Structure formats: C-alpha cells, structure tokens
Amino acid sequence: MSSRTNPKVVVLMGGPSREREVSLSSGRECATALRDEGFEVIELDAGADLAERLRAIAPDVVFNALHGRWGEDGCVQGILEWLHIPYTHSGVLASALAMDKQRSKDVYRRHGLPIVESILAPKDAVCTRHVMAPPYVVKPNSEGSSVGVYLVMDGANTPPQLDDAMPDEVMVEAFAKGRELTTTVLGDRALGVTEIITSGWYDYHAKYSVGGSRHEIPAQLPSEVTEACLDYALRAHAALGCRGMSRTDFRWDDTRGLDGLILLETNTQPGMTPTSLAPEQAAYVGMSFGALCRWLVEDASCCR
Image (cartoon, rainbow, N blue to C red; front, side, top):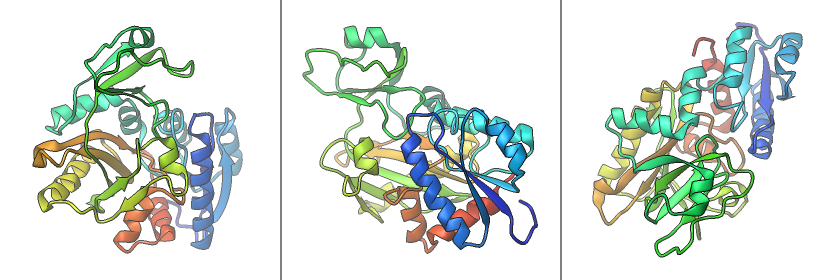
C-alpha cells in the first residue's frame, strides 16, 4: 500500500453479477468505515469501463467489495494485476478456484478436508430425472450468496424445475443435514465459529434480510468440533491460496460427532453488510468494523 499520509482508496461495488445489491450494501458500509478511519475514499460501481476509470482515478489501493461472478472469480483481480494497483482479498487463482465449487472440492479432497459427493450435470438432465438419489441440492457451480439453490428432499417424486436464469451446467450435491456453521479467517488466524439459526433453509433472504437468521457466536459446540472448524477453515484458506480474509461454511450433523462435520465452500470476499457474518466474528475477537476494513486495506498488494 502507498505510504501517503491519506491514501486514496477506491471501493469497488455493484457490478453486473446476480449479487449486485449485496455488493452495493457491502461497498457502502466499507466506504463509510474507511472514511471514518481517515482514508480518502471513492466509491466506484464496477462496469465494463472499469480499467479506464481506474486509470483516471489512479488510486493507491482498491478495496474489492464485489460479490459473485466477474468481481470475485479472478476477472477483476486480473484487471487490477494488469494495472499494478494493490487490492484486497484473494488473487486471481484463489478467487477463480474458490468460485468454482467443483474445482475447490477437488482441492479440499486432496488436502484431506471432509466434503460430500457432488457432480456437474446438464441442466436439462437435472430437470428430467433424479441424477442423484435424494436428498440433494442443486446450485450453480459458480455463484455465491445461495443464489439459485434448489433443495430436493427424500421422497420427492419429480426432479426440480430450474428457472431460466440457471446455467446450462449445474452442481448436484448430496444434502448434508445438520447445523449451519461458519468460520472467518483473517490472514493466518481463524476468528471463531458462528452457528446460523433459521426457521428454514439458509437462503438469500435469510442471509441478507434483517431478522432472516440468528447468529450465535461462539457456537455452542463440543470443543473438538469447534477446533476442527477453526483448523479446517485455515487449511481451506491455505489450500486454495487465499489472501486477506475468507469465510468457510460447514454443516454439522450432531448425531455423528466429529464425523458429521462437512466443509461446504469457501468465500473469498465475504459479505460486509449489516447482517454479515465476517464483521460479527471480527467484533467477537475485539476488532471493530473500521479496524477490519483498515486491516484489509493495509494488507492489500499485487501478485496475490
């Protein structure tokens, strides 16, 4: 990062993905916090002219608050590397790997992390027949924020009818029952374990609507499960090559003890909205939202 007294930070937000509204919320929160921390901040809705606008602004650092495809999958990271502008969160390869759920699972498997069976299948086949014995979950292979998730439970007579927005190839994943857990990693430190409690599926509404879910931190778990979440999140962060901050999600079947803990996925750019989990975990270890945003800016670099 620049050694200027008042570094100029561009906060990237919005963009073209299906998670645009979440990104706008994250970006505004981060921009406000960084101004309070003394940074000169420019908010930039990232469009097709991103490279041209960044050249004109000439920031010292880019704070990447984009979510979803293009902003979180290595594409924007490649632009920032090309322009030699230090940026927050993970680099090109780690971003691309983590966004591709099937490839990230291949990495987890090679590093001995617990996952469930999954396959990639044509959308038409998934709509025509059960390509996996229920219960299973259908979701895009390269989206986040529970966008386009279909849950097919035991006893379902017909396959799911996926909407037109779903890609031609989707992931079909064995359903992992149990409690929803998550752990944020900041640098080389796992911050804690949160249990996410909802009245139903932890979908987009539950994640981003006020009152959509309740977060319990620290999660009330056996010590071995807590320690495993912290360990697995750190190992997933390292295995994918993540930088800065990531958040890894789990399901835990408490009837099976430690064997019931399953790693679902790693998010390289966790939400920074008023209902988001990573800022809550930072606060749990004594780091304010402003201090978290400052840490990310000070951690920024190229060649990530």
